[in-house]
Image 1: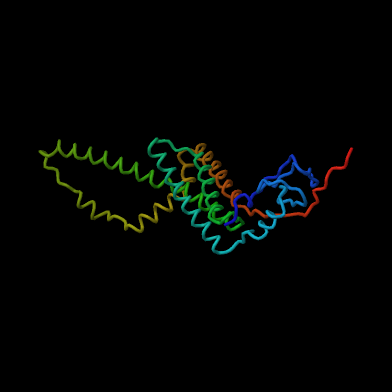
Image 2: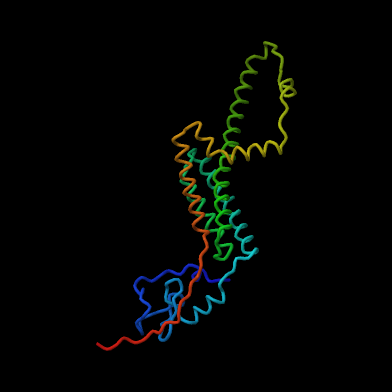
Length: 248
């Protein structure tokens, strides 16, 4: 497995020049002193051993890597959707900023699953998964409030029926059921999914300003996922001679 430190080396601005200082320069990956020649990996000073190791372990974008990244991304999207919906149900507050956390979670998970590999197809998948997770989080919230309203309605109906039993009113519940058959389970699930995916835009009809703010935050969250899954090319330059400084 590729060392995570090799995927995104951090440039050391304090040693930006290619000519180093013998005795004080260290490899930014193994942290060992560099006495002779050295290399630059994405701007970071590295010893010949680490440079060779990075060349040998440089991950390639394969179908297996993409599938692993996708599976990790799907898992993160499901987790983000559950956390988003749970927070909304427990607190009664829908915070659009949670979209940022979902985008971060999906992007990080995909890079983790692919062992640091990114690219355009990873970015597209991460953006779609982020949108799907945030939008479909509305479905469990709707179901929760629908069940609450149904329970309240049944209680009111039971109370009204108890107070009117002596009136002999006929029960038309069976006739209504026959006249309005319930949709099939598959059709109901399909409708919920479509409504869930459209929920960020449906909010515009109820609260235009709030809906627009939610869409902007969702866009930023998708940008997070896009940036995290971008390709990370590794450029290694060298060798450079770590020559001793000339006497003054």
